[in-house]
Image (cartoon, rainbow, N blue to C red; front, side, top):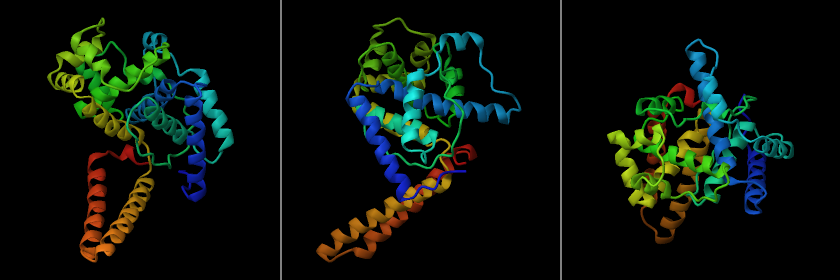
Length: 292
């Protein structure tokens, strides 16, 4: 069952967020490790659903397993300690909260975090992540498992994954467009997946755009990361979060309009209609696996 996301749960989320932020700021833990853990959690869960639907057991190529390590044990131990401090928070919520914190600490935009993911004891497995030896079609297939199909989202998330992987190798990195600049200028030996990003017309256009427009990358990455993080989020949690935001916006609009004495009803109606638009758009764009 999904957790009861009440005031107490949100308070614990805020406390856990502060703990995660302090670990990174005090350099007691790497933001890139948290980011990689968040990716691995979503791809692992999606991979298990994919294999269940196909009537197969989850399996991964042995060669891939050898070349793609599981998340650093320190990552899982760190999350376990925070879980012990805040036992009502589910592990999937903690994994994605850590990812959101990591993005911000690495220089990315603020990503809205919506809590309420159902508890799961499935351990994040990095062998489910996209690997370097993949063609354009294979990249699309692996991202399709996590409901990501827009080329710009695939390219943006792949860039974020490369950042997280490089961070695991000791590099001191920031979430910016430098990876795409190097990719376009071919300042590094390209993997098959990176060649796919340049050879595929849709991917190539995104790479070119991000290489020259940092803000476009950051905005698209924020959108893509949130979509990835929301995978598995119960529909009820999304509805509640959207209602709360809409109510807050209505209060702000009413307060502002009341001060000038005009347009109160119209302003409130616009906010309410925007809520229904978001709900319909969200429902239409996601499969049943998105909301459990």
